[in-house]
Image (cartoon, rainbow, N blue to C red; front, side, top):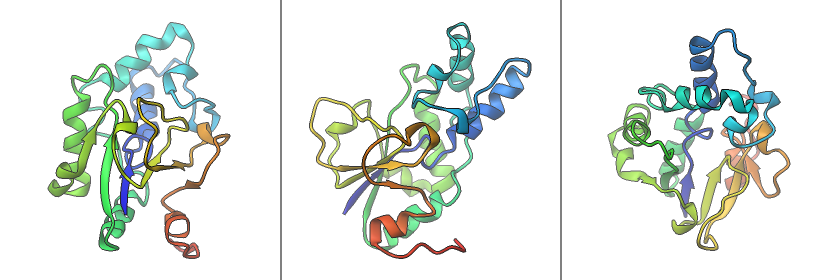
Length: 185
């Protein structure tokens, strides 16, 4: 099975990275915790007058490279490979891509190993990529094509109303393999 996995918010903890950088850059400005988020696009959660400050944080050099891994993500990806699945990282770069693109490659190499840079697909339209499953926190994937993959929504507070099958790295074995969840994991 070909499994496509998004990076930001799914294996790289965008929320943690953003809030750490936001508090450091703007300690007196309000922040929106992930639990309070209601929309996929983080920038839409902030008042319009803070739009440029929000963009400056996640467009800054080092932002994407500095994101910590989502708990359990790296081990789950390696386990999927060991089970014989073809796993690819399928991620969308920012429109202001100057730092984002190279840092996504560097992040994959640093946290998953150099062989994962060969498994990285960057595209603004994920519907053009073939696969059996796409694991993504974006609840609505739009593009030019009707996707060949099934969209599994990576569970986050801002996508809880989205239809379809959901998973986290704590539940992936149950969702993908039908195994009972290991409470200790």
